[in-house]
Image (cartoon, rainbow, N blue to C red; front, side, top):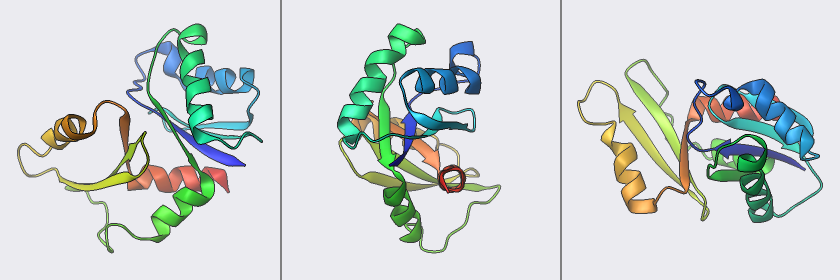
Length: 154
């Protein structure tokens, strides 16, 4: 089974959050075909384990032990992500230099879709509003990032 792991709040300034560190971490946890995607906490892997909540818990428990930090982890199956993209949640609207199509994954399940207009002051407050409404167990990716992740999974 192929999965995408979305790790909240990853920044490239921490050496334990780089591609090589994530690749080794996931391989040490006995996951197969591990491939980090972009430097924002996305990792594609394969495993026979089928419980997404158990996988999330297992990874979250091991992050501080092996990489020295704690973060929320959200897992989605390949077929789930494919269906999500195929549904065209933004109804044909495309990413552009002035707007970003964002998918916020909720740990409790489901997603929130937002279009951030980079030309309108204050739209970055959307993230703060999402946290207020859904808590910190969420993470956001652009639709373009999700499409790159799906390509890695093929």
